[in-house]
Image (cartoon, rainbow, N blue to C red; front, side, top):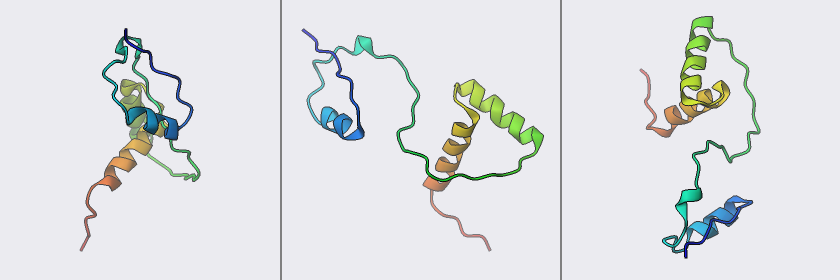
Length: 87
């Protein structure tokens, strides 16, 4: 019999759960979900053109996420790569 996935309340619990044999899990109960685990502790304020903000909102709506999260993901992606030095 397949076992179900327990409710995990922390990243530590999730790590411990994932560090075991998961071949007997019932994956039929899974549903797609979007989430962010890291707590946000800093804040910025910036001005954008209306056209750019509208484009950001369209892209975030197409992905089904809030536009602030979309902006955060774009920034995270940009800084994850190698640093390029200007002249």
